[in-house]
Length: 597
Image (cartoon, rainbow, N blue to C red; front, top):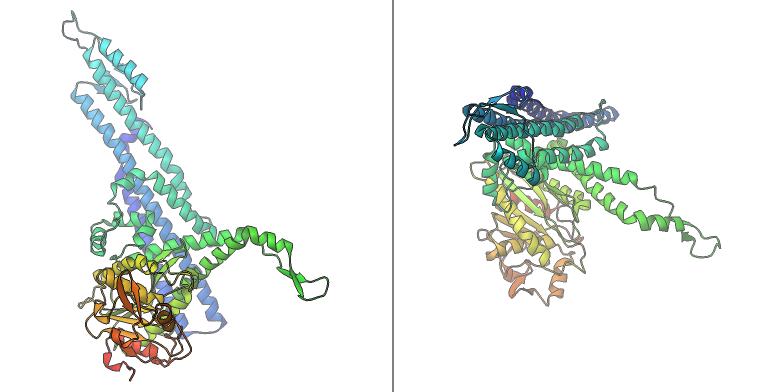
């Protein structure tokens, strides 16, 4: 890049363009929400049949297009700001060098060379003539040494200054040239395909585009306030509120996963960030599945005709050895992500509110936090912690439980807003025998649960700050007990269901007001009895302390009726005392709770 071009460069023009793309991203986001939460919701409530299904499918595609446009425009905005930042830095260096040269009596020429006047060193018989020098960018120890030697022996004292100014100008021009060369392909890569279909490949490319913009914009990223690590939800919220719209947009574009994981941020922001992460992850998993060859037939008839009637094919065995585990893992992730999207698509069905994705991660067994309704504006919020074997692949069942609880609670709330949340924010034990007897899964996950509960309090905008209920099922009750033992559980009520034991000795240690610990134990549920049997009675020791099965009288919980007797997983079935009692607690309708006699 030459001197005149850089001097004429106006960073503000690119920053204004970035603002335009950011505005377009916001418009696309608003359109997506309108399609999902108003138009599609209306179709679900008022129409049915093949025409309605076709319309919903088309609307889902339109929503996907808007979401893709929102994400890509956010990246373009950030890339333009990054380019303007780099070019502005180079221009500032150039202007400073020109100003310094002029102040020293030197002249900067249009080609970047520097002319210096005549001058003489002390003791010289006559002045040395002036001249013109050209600079060089960068330099090395050897070239710098040669340059210093030339300056020292030159008779004109202005020569050395001119060389320094010329080098500064060359460095600035080189930085601008490198910035242009670096950003041009990144911006070209953000051009969408010339069609109306957003494919899995398109979403996978978003991940690549993000990495490209993140790498090219290192200096720009370093200038942004850093994403908090290990901060409290209150500190997270303060950080976010202190960002400019440009900085918020940049973090959403470049650090969506980090932003989506920050407790204390508004639910709408976390949802926006995590949906982008989900869309990219789902596309990548689908492409991974597409690369796996079809599974051969596993069995074929036994040629001998004797029992057993089938034999395992060698071709299947080879396929399974190479691809079986990969496909199983990908299928599980895909099932979980599809279940989350199915909940998005159910918005409006019989009044079901929009869903908010408050956390998402495919690592290990996967994590997801899904809310029915916005907890920031809810008067009553329930947070449900699932237990052993919970993972991303099976999140659909847990989301359905909280959907049932939302419907029951909403009917009792008297017009007040309700949010019910599935919190799979920890690595749950995956085996009843090998994992569930150990407390470290609960101990490791409890701090994250406490942070999440604190974050709900920070983000809630109601006058009262909201009424919060923590609900645990099975090993999830152990985690909630550990959360109370390790810190302050920011909840007004606690509900246990099918608990094998919690990590405190009595209800009074659960960090909620007296009388606000509730328990459900179905007659046919074997898990509490396994807890008693496995730990020598109702008491079992954890790190020197004593924990109790919360259905035992000495624990001191309110024992609610369940109306179920089929086992461990019916506490959220519709038309049961169990579900109605939980809804009464969630909405603070304690007089409607049925207690065991």
